[in-house]
Length: 118
View 1 (cartoon, rainbow, N blue to C red):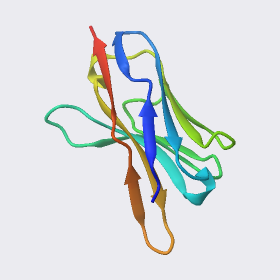
View 2 (view 1 turned 30 degrees about the horizontal axis):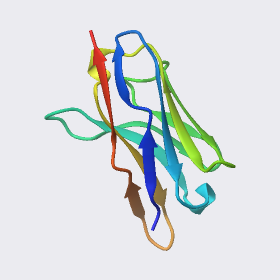
View 3 (view 1 turned 90 degrees about the vertical axis):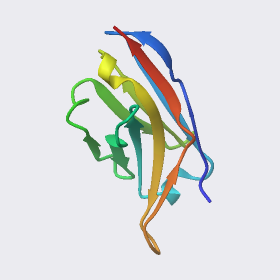
View 4 (view 1 turned 120 degrees about the vertical axis):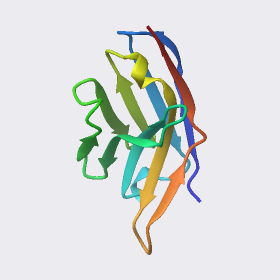
């Protein structure tokens, strides 16, 4: 059972930056991909960014050019650098780990709150 622990959320003014971290309880290579998702009040959870073991990244349209996902394989940690934050980036950010074998499994962290004040 993969355990994920997020940190780094908080309150920031619009235009500011935050960096989120997600610590993985086992080797990050035991997963196929890691990602960040977010959920705003009254809205569905949406993709923010993903990164594969090969380093391929994918971003949601609303964060392209502002957010960067990265990973430290030695520390078994995934990061989300968020720049030029907007009020619409407010929400709970969840770390995700995906395994594809022997069947698809998703693991989630407890979430960390990000609030951007305008």
